[in-house]
Amino acid sequence: MREKARTEDEIAAAFFVPAGVVKQRLRLAAVAPSLLDAYAEEEMTLDQLMAFTVGPDHARQEQVWEALQRHYSRAPHEIRRMLTEGAVRASDKRAQFVGLGDYVEAWGEILRDLFQQDDGGWLQDAALLDVMVREKLAEKAEGVRAEGWKWVEVDTEFPYGHSFGMRRVHGEAVPMSDEEAASYQALKAEYDALEAEHAEADELPDDVDARLGEIEEAMEAFEVRPIRYEADDFALAGAFVSIDSSGRLRVERGYVRPEDEPVEEVEDTGQVAPETAPVEDSDNTVASASDEEEEDDGLKPLSDRLVMELTARRTLALRNALVQDPQVAFLAALHAMVLRLFYRYATGNCVEVEPRNAGFGSQVPGLGDTGYAQAIDQRHETWARNLPKAPEDLWEALTEFDSCSREALFAHCVAMSVNAVQDPYQRRPRAIAHADVLAGTVGLDMAKAGWTTTGDSYLGRVTKARILEAVREAKGKDAADRITGLKKTEMVTAAEDLLSGTGWLPEPLRTPPLREEDASEIELIDNADIADGAPSDDDPDSGEAQSAEDGDEQAIGDSDPSEEDDPIAGDAFARTAAE
Image (cartoon, rainbow, N blue to C red; front, side, top):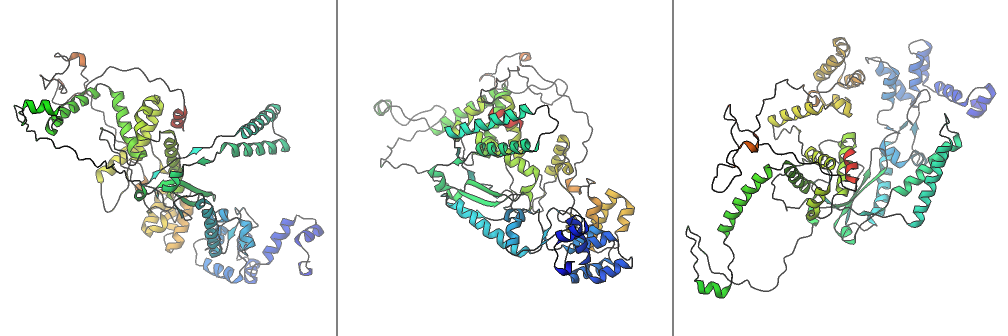
């Protein structure tokens, strides 16, 4: 009937079977004749024959069948993998960005598997897909460029940390208009009414379920507000245009390059500062000018040496006072770290605590698409939007945070300074050892975090001995022996299948168990036990820490506990901490 130009639906109707069954049978009949002969001679199973239907090229089918004679495995999934080498999965972010319909309209071919779930199939023309991706990205970038940004960079994917060292300006969300607010409230009321009406139903009717989905989409469109930037922001900043892991357009706006930062110009008044007579500092502090000249000229500025001495005393006294108030000390350290991480060029802090945020550059492809990287970026962006724009206002803002928000922000800042990268050009064995301790303390498990052992991530980049070692550790000696004689490419594929779901990790990703050691006891000296009372200038030793009774180790000064901070009225920061 097919030879008579009958369609699949007509054939299905004639034999009273579903059209899908007809398509499967026709696809099986279209396999290379030599493979059909092998199946007839029982040299091939039906599952293997069905796997060969993925690719329509008879020559390629015969090549794969011949290669399988020397292969360790003739599993159907291996046949599908070999037939689709060089093709792009339909679930790939590039294919999702372009759209399968547009790809087909451009005469692109999609390979489909009619016998099992294939997630949309495989796009066979990877070169055509790349051209379509570049053209669509360029078109979208023109729209972003039309917004007025100083520069726009375009790529399918930027390396993680590509914006490191750049300041980011944050616009303000445009509030809803009265009409939009009214429409939003109407949608919300309808949604609540439908939910209340069917609250006791085991399953929602199809029309009600569809309507609830439409309302959710409409409400989400109202909730995602456009961002408004100032004219000065457009003149300084730029945007990155790329594709995210799900195939949607990603636009990162508002990044200012260091060379584009405005230079503060000192106003030239044209006046020449009056010359002051030199002042000599000695033990007797004798000025070179006479008393009459001082009365005529007014008060002289303090000498640099005297100011240095006075502020040195004040610095030590401030240190000693800060020790007595741990909460203020915590706030000061938090202020210093936030200034460094969120305000690139702010220097207004006397606490010299400077966290370093290690940049990764382009050394780790795909790092930005991992779940943990996206969580960090989203958390950093949320904090950046909740912090004041001017660094001068940061201290007051931090004092108004509740304790949970401060702790969450402090944890974020400390986490951003962690650097456990083993760089071959800068070996830091002690730092890496401490990273192991830190990972053990927080219970880090890279397998649970989302890392999987694949050919791209590990197996294809190590020796065969390493591959066998991994299989031996995860699946045992027998599994490793079965793939010992394979070539490197075949061994990688086999090992990837064997290690799937085992949670095996290479040594650099493992978290060593913590050593069980008793913590040393530290005796605390209460301030009330100090006989001499408060420290004074006359007693330079009174401000020093007292020694423990049983040795030369210095004890930690105890302080009176202070009351918990009251939560601030606006709980945006607390919500951020919870996230």
